[in-house]
Length: 123
Image 1 (cartoon, helix red, strand yellow):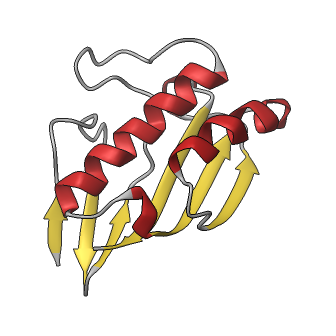
Image 2 (spheres, helix red, strand yellow; image 1 turned 180 degrees about the horizontal axis):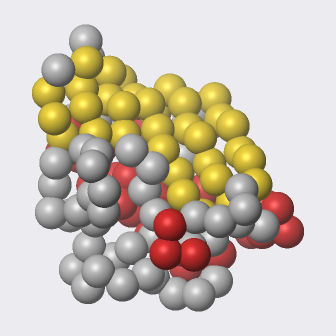
Protein backbone atom coordinates (compact mmCIF):
# COMPACT_ATOMS: atom_id res chain seq x y z
CA UNK A 1 0.00 0.00 0.00
CA UNK A 2 1.20 3.47 -0.85
CA UNK A 3 -0.20 6.57 0.85
CA UNK A 4 -1.20 9.42 -1.45
CA UNK A 5 -0.78 12.85 0.07
CA UNK A 6 -0.60 16.29 -1.53
CA UNK A 7 -0.70 19.87 -0.29
CA UNK A 8 -2.79 20.68 -3.39
CA UNK A 9 -5.81 19.10 -1.70
CA UNK A 10 -7.09 19.82 1.81
CA UNK A 11 -5.28 18.07 4.64
CA UNK A 12 -7.22 15.37 6.44
CA UNK A 13 -9.29 16.81 9.29
CA UNK A 14 -9.42 13.51 11.13
CA UNK A 15 -7.61 10.19 11.55
CA UNK A 16 -7.49 9.24 7.86
CA UNK A 17 -5.35 9.60 4.73
CA UNK A 18 -6.19 11.52 1.57
CA UNK A 19 -5.81 8.30 -0.39
CA UNK A 20 -4.10 4.96 -0.92
CA UNK A 21 -2.85 3.11 -3.96
CA UNK A 22 -3.24 -0.67 -3.74
CA UNK A 23 -2.40 -2.96 -6.67
CA UNK A 24 -2.56 -0.10 -9.17
CA UNK A 25 -5.86 1.26 -7.91
CA UNK A 26 -6.31 4.63 -6.17
CA UNK A 27 -8.87 4.88 -3.39
CA UNK A 28 -9.52 8.41 -2.13
CA UNK A 29 -11.14 9.70 0.97
CA UNK A 30 -14.12 11.94 0.39
CA UNK A 31 -13.15 15.41 -0.75
CA UNK A 32 -15.18 18.32 0.51
CA UNK A 33 -15.01 21.78 -1.10
CA UNK A 34 -12.26 23.22 1.05
CA UNK A 35 -9.73 25.37 -0.78
CA UNK A 36 -6.33 23.93 0.22
CA UNK A 37 -4.67 27.35 -0.12
CA UNK A 38 -6.95 29.04 2.41
CA UNK A 39 -8.50 26.21 4.42
CA UNK A 40 -11.89 27.82 3.80
CA UNK A 41 -15.01 26.37 2.16
CA UNK A 42 -15.16 27.52 -1.46
CA UNK A 43 -18.39 29.47 -1.91
CA UNK A 44 -21.80 28.90 -0.44
CA UNK A 45 -23.56 27.40 -3.46
CA UNK A 46 -23.50 23.91 -4.94
CA UNK A 47 -21.79 25.01 -8.19
CA UNK A 48 -18.78 26.57 -6.43
CA UNK A 49 -18.54 23.74 -3.95
CA UNK A 50 -18.84 20.98 -6.57
CA UNK A 51 -16.05 22.59 -8.62
CA UNK A 52 -13.74 22.72 -5.59
CA UNK A 53 -14.46 19.12 -4.58
CA UNK A 54 -13.65 18.01 -8.14
CA UNK A 55 -10.45 20.10 -8.20
CA UNK A 56 -9.38 18.52 -4.92
CA UNK A 57 -9.90 15.07 -6.43
CA UNK A 58 -7.95 16.17 -9.50
CA UNK A 59 -4.99 17.05 -7.27
CA UNK A 60 -5.11 13.58 -5.70
CA UNK A 61 -5.39 11.93 -9.10
CA UNK A 62 -2.36 13.88 -10.35
CA UNK A 63 -0.33 13.06 -7.24
CA UNK A 64 -1.11 9.36 -7.77
CA UNK A 65 -0.15 9.52 -11.46
CA UNK A 66 -3.73 9.09 -12.64
CA UNK A 67 -6.40 11.31 -14.20
CA UNK A 68 -10.14 11.88 -14.40
CA UNK A 69 -10.42 9.61 -17.45
CA UNK A 70 -9.11 6.66 -15.40
CA UNK A 71 -11.78 6.95 -12.70
CA UNK A 72 -13.69 3.71 -12.26
CA UNK A 73 -16.27 4.73 -9.64
CA UNK A 74 -17.33 7.74 -7.64
CA UNK A 75 -19.53 8.10 -4.62
CA UNK A 76 -21.19 11.49 -4.24
CA UNK A 77 -22.84 12.83 -1.12
CA UNK A 78 -25.24 15.78 -1.32
CA UNK A 79 -26.71 17.70 1.58
CA UNK A 80 -29.80 18.41 -0.54
CA UNK A 81 -31.09 16.39 -3.53
CA UNK A 82 -32.55 19.66 -4.76
CA UNK A 83 -28.96 20.40 -5.85
CA UNK A 84 -28.77 17.22 -7.96
CA UNK A 85 -29.16 18.84 -11.40
CA UNK A 86 -26.70 21.68 -10.74
CA UNK A 87 -24.22 19.23 -9.19
CA UNK A 88 -24.47 16.97 -12.25
CA UNK A 89 -23.68 19.87 -14.59
CA UNK A 90 -20.41 20.54 -12.76
CA UNK A 91 -19.59 16.85 -12.25
CA UNK A 92 -19.99 16.14 -15.99
CA UNK A 93 -17.27 18.70 -16.81
CA UNK A 94 -14.69 16.66 -14.90
CA UNK A 95 -15.80 13.04 -15.21
CA UNK A 96 -16.22 12.93 -18.98
CA UNK A 97 -15.57 9.17 -19.17
CA UNK A 98 -18.77 8.66 -17.15
CA UNK A 99 -17.51 6.31 -14.42
CA UNK A 100 -19.88 4.20 -12.37
CA UNK A 101 -21.42 6.33 -9.63
CA UNK A 102 -23.57 6.35 -6.55
CA UNK A 103 -25.13 9.60 -5.35
CA UNK A 104 -26.94 9.89 -2.06
CA UNK A 105 -28.40 12.61 0.11
CA UNK A 106 -27.09 12.81 3.64
CA UNK A 107 -28.25 14.71 6.68
CA UNK A 108 -25.04 16.67 7.23
CA UNK A 109 -21.50 16.81 5.88
CA UNK A 110 -18.30 18.00 7.57
CA UNK A 111 -18.14 21.80 7.93
CA UNK A 112 -21.79 21.86 6.77
CA UNK A 113 -20.71 21.75 3.11
CA UNK A 114 -23.14 20.93 0.34
CA UNK A 115 -21.25 18.05 -1.29
CA UNK A 116 -18.49 15.49 -0.87
CA UNK A 117 -17.03 13.14 -3.49
CA UNK A 118 -14.79 10.10 -3.22
CA UNK A 119 -13.42 7.98 -6.02
CA UNK A 120 -11.67 4.84 -7.16
CA UNK A 121 -9.33 5.10 -10.16
CA UNK A 122 -6.77 3.13 -12.13
CA UNK A 123 -3.21 4.38 -11.71
